Length: 165
Image (cartoon, rainbow, N blue to C red):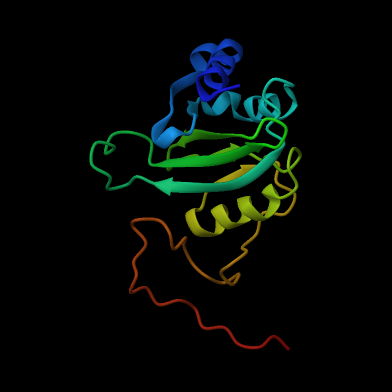
């Protein structure tokens, strides 16, 4: 199944909830409505024609000062899926506003999402509803803010921590 057929299959199943679809850089990519994200991830994994059985990566992008995106949602959460049986890749994106930056967790589908979602939470402040243990992964617990946000003040002083007795 080629990239166009993969995107057509998503459009068949989710209709207008597929907000955009195309193949930039040769990789099929769909932007989904946040309301169908969990169902779409599940569909991509269990549908025999798709069979995206591997979550390769999960990350986010902050479009705060990106030209042309000033009025759009600030963040995109990006899922990179791979199908071992079909040797195909798929990129799914969901747009998230700064206020209410929450998406459903993919941990029940792919256990590796646990670590990837924790990293996105730690760096961008996007929450994953239903995550079993959403806490900082890279920064220490007392760290204030989310350092990959475009408006994070790089000169900010952080609380000093010492050994715990």
